[in-house]
Length: 132
Ligand code: TYD
Image 1 (cartoon, protein in one colour):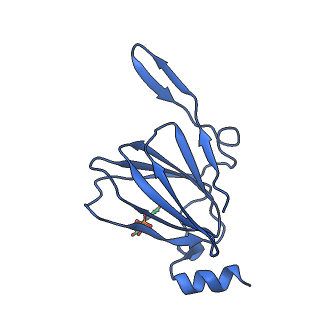
Image 2 (cartoon, rainbow, N blue to C red):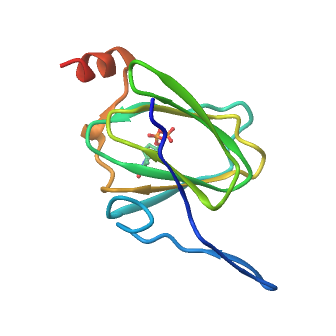
């Protein structure tokens, strides 16, 4: 399956680094929501769903984690450990996040507000929806 990642420019100087992400130029959609996952308990898996319409870019801004992407036919695992790298989680992609390092901060930039009706939370329902 095709994995789409984005390398954000790191503005670095003797003070440190700054990374800016602008909608439509650095990521391919407009953002309506930002959320972040912190304080993850050891051995936790998060996600475990797909979205019908939502697009997201995930950025591991501190620490590391792994992200499983599954289009219903193929699966891919992406290791996230750079604050300058975004991963597209497109609509109708089953995704799971795991192997969170202590102190991991996973930032999500989302194309829409939170809408429970946009979630497909059962894997067999996901397979059914992508095949219709
Ligand atoms: P959940 O969907 O279980 O997160 P994940 O898929 O990362 O494991 O969401 C956890 C809780 O947070 C749940 O009660 C819904 C709520 N939530 C919001 O209120 N707004 C949001 O933008 C998100 C992503 C979740």
